Length: 150
Image 1 (cartoon, rainbow, N blue to C red):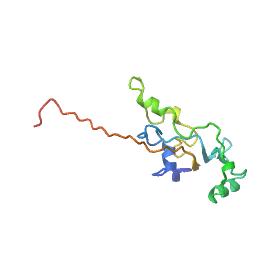
Image 2: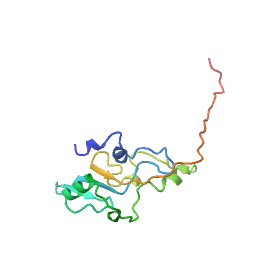
Image 3: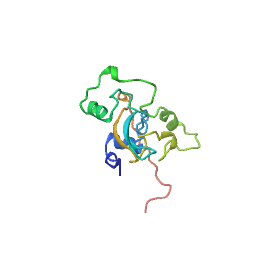
Image 4: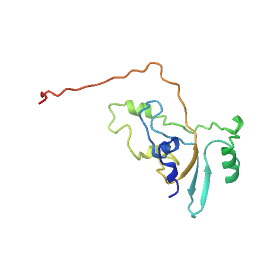
């Protein structure tokens, strides 16, 4: 099964499964920038570079440059594609919404490697990073039944 090695407890596995969602700012694992292999409409294996990084033109050049870590600042493009779910923070805080903030196989969160669930072989992804929150608080809500305990 192509891509089965990508599913697991890893960053790429998280992207493939849209895992997470507990981090309000970042949301579930999502990116529009990845390097992956797929079977095209003609049944041919195709390497797709949507990382936004110039890695060359042939599969050998692309994988070699990525593997050798020969990426320069000028190779990286910032073209407006998203490296996290930008709408999540608003959706998850909308307590009056008629729809859930997050659910499996949300079509708005499926994009190439994001949510591919093993249908692609994913080699690399680009994700946003965030500074640690300075003023964190933990709340514990507890409810005691009106009935007594037996």
